[in-house]
Length: 116
Image 1 (cartoon, one colour):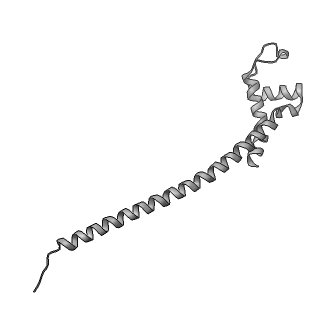
Image 2 (tube, one colour):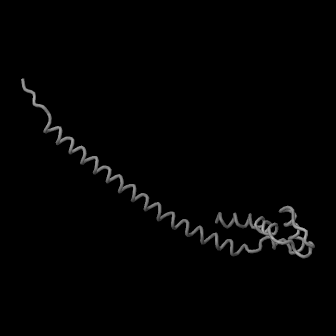
Image 3 (spheres, one colour):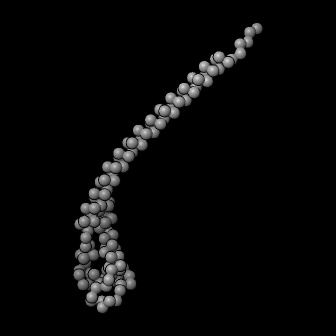
């Protein structure tokens, strides 16, 4: 939802950016645009205010697909990392246990016996 709202708010700027980067329309006699405001006012004057939202349907559809895939992938990656860290913790614990047992066995055999 937030992605759709952001797309709606920024679409006029995207349309104006394309107007700045492309060849000027024939009505301008080859004179390029100099600012976003100039492009936007030209579009509103010659094509109407709704023309600032050209291509918004595909943009919103793309946003919804991308956000859906991102969320799905994020969930799966989160689960994988949790499982990986649990596995690494278990390995570390087992290794520490083995080292502790080996040191205890070594200490038991090498400890000097003191008697009174």
